[in-house]
Image (cartoon, rainbow over all chains, first blue to last red; front, side, top):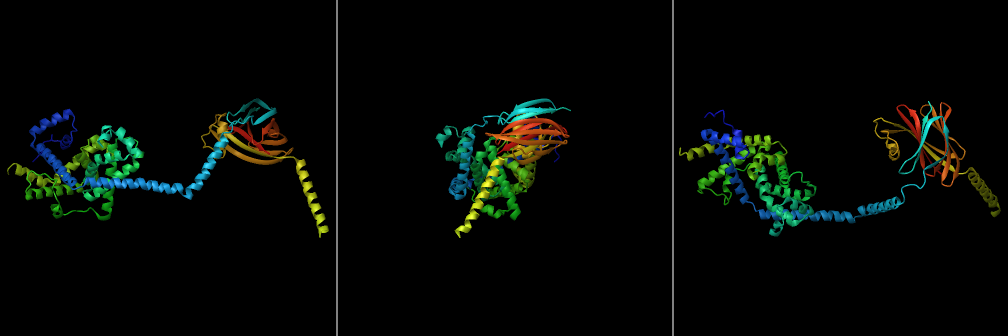
Amino acid sequence: MKRSKACDSMLLSRHMDGELSPAEYDWLMSHLAACPDCQEELRQNEALRTLYKSDLAEERSQVSFQGLERKVLKQVSQKRLSWWMRHKELFFSKKLLIPATAMAAMVLLFFSLIRQPLLPPDPSAIITSLSGDMTSVIVLETPKTRQTIIWFNEAS
Amino acid sequence: MSNRESIGLSDEGTLIPLLKKGDEEAFRYLLNQYQTKLFGIAYGITSDREESLDIVQDVFVKVFQHIGAFRGESGLATWIYRIAVNQSLNWQRRWKRKFGWRHRPLGDEANDDNQGLILKDPSPQAVYEQKELETVLREGLKGLPAEARVVFVLNEVEGLSYDEIADVLKIKKGTVSSRLYYARKKLRKSLEKYMEEGNEEEQGL
Amino acid sequence: MKAKRFPFITLSLAVAIIALSTIARAGPRIHIEAVTILASHDSSPRDRRLSGLINELESVFRYSSYRQISHDKMNLAIGDTGVVPLPGRRQLKITPIRVSGKRAELRVVIFKRGQQVFQTVIQLLNGGRMTVGGPKHKKGYLLFNISSSF
């Protein structure tokens, strides 16, 4: 049986899934009314869907989902437990305790040091004399550590 | 459960934070919501009931382990379906590498219980024919490229829209449409003989 | 036996006293480090050797690149002069003058082609550092970061 050029299997497939625009839907409906080939293809697609769903329904009916649920919950609780057991061993092992204690001591030392004022009380350098063959000179201080900076432009 | 449901476990905004906290009731709710759907996806891809059950278990364990990293960039369902598809395809790849695909002979199928199947005509002949059709369909599905099979399964099992399928598989909507079209065409072809027979019978020929 | 030992002990003590008094007379030695840096607008990657210093310099200067040219260490007695060769036929000479409290007084002189172009006397904190900069070199400027400890 030769199909009309207007037949569009892709459109039929999308129609099955409710993915047509209103214009496409209207066109397809009028085409279907006059096209036995497309009617047959649509029927086969629908039969395919029914068959597949019935096969799946049968498979599902063979499965004990309560049993599956129990298995999953058991597995998950084991994972939960094993996570704690793993970490408990790690938390209380010497391998972790010694470095952790050392790290804690270092952190304490660090914070005790930074609690002291960050800024030195005085500028790093006091300039008592300055001279040279320069066109200009500027004395600066860095804001954080009060490092003294002397910037000069050499006479060319 | 009903109490929790009434306070909104069906709402992802409530469910996800509880899952992240490891709330057992929330996880139980998730299990009830998704286990049959995930089984459908796994079975559609693998055509193996026992393996599908294992896959569903693995998916839930993965969800439990990784829900903390779930950022909500896609919906929870999309994320879970994506895990299920990946797990099923991984199983299939492993299986093919090891043994090739396992085929179940028709005789075995005919011996299965079919209490759950409702037939218009429950006569032994009709049951047998239905089983045969399903077996042919399953074989047809196996014969599809994985990409087309996954799209077909997501569409038929869960009735996911093209947009949702595109989101799960991270492909374009147009690709979903063409893969579905291809899958249907191939499956119709594999069932051609039976379909035509059915049609003739219906028409009284 | 005891009589034999006595001169040896006496001699050792004498040597120790002389050595200690020599050190005491010599005064403290000043450890000085001079880091020469080329600051420019190059797109060269950060010089890791300067990681601590760059943050400090960037709070004052706006150069994109700071590259270490040399790092000289000197251990100088008061009155000694340490010489650091610099690019562009320049020299940096540092002379500790004295130590006063927590500061060392240093004379810092820059020579260019044998001519003195810059001279300063600074009192630098023990463990402190300061920077002298300005001479043009290639497409950037030279900076001399000087630190002292005693």
